[in-house]
Image 1 (cartoon, rainbow, N blue to C red):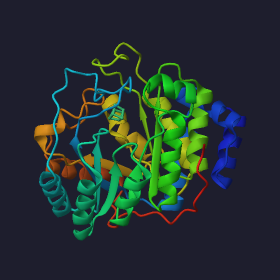
Image 2 (image 1 turned 45 degrees about the vertical axis):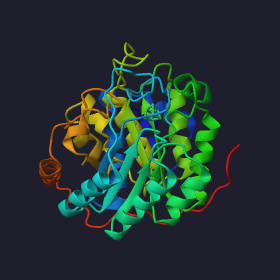
Image 3 (image 1 turned 120 degrees about the vertical axis):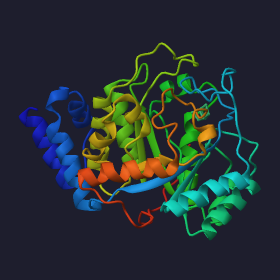
Image 4 (image 1 turned 30 degrees about the vertical axis):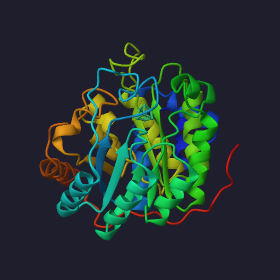
Length: 353
Ligand code: SF4
């Protein structure tokens, strides 16, 4: 890594800012020269958040989706996928089991599935809050009123990745969606008092370093409490079946840069990164990440939540999965966080568009 890159990294460690040009320069450094960047991100993570790693239990409760995202195996046009929906009681039972295993946060995730109406989700949120759990929702774009109701019932966080900050690329990848709507949902969620999570894919067809830099800067501008950054992995049942995947190295650089700019945000070591590179989780945890999302969906459904293929640990029971992660963390000298990992309240920002 050259002298200029080192100076830029030192500055970012000091004041948590980078210009677009500086991010592009760091993204373009040779892979073998990124040790300084990863080390700096690790230092910032340690300084602001300590060593503890938050384990979140994720329940993928429906793989039905009404959307057509060109990279995703859940897209409604994929007729080869066997679909499933869990009942509210089965979702609740999976959450109780996860709670017994020690999870303090449950993430409820699904495709955009209108089958679950606002009241069904509200009642689930209420029941999970009665268990003393932090509740994160990841249900896609819904109406302001729905978001408001779920927040009123106690939902703490909402994940809605922006996927790419480039509106043209966004609309190419999401033929039935609109970038402005996406951002507006994030602003609504912020206004309603959710801790918000967004994030992007790395290595999308047509994506440039300039676009990736804009992704990092958008996460900074939104001041997200959580940022999920994972590689693009082509799914054979989608229109992007033959596209080249993203790389682990570029994904790790994006995680590290996001950590430099958002020192207090929660950054997961994403499952997609582990799918792409076996040691991706450990590398992400040493490059700024401080969260692991573990799948606590009943085993019968795991393989069917097939956004991308060969998902890690699709056949591992929740107890065994958690034990293994605890061993991995112990080897890294990283304890499991004992609190729910809430973020300090952020200021509301005006809605876009
Ligand atoms: S990315 Fe989300 S909204 Fe798009 S098809 Fe997949 S599950 Fe549906």
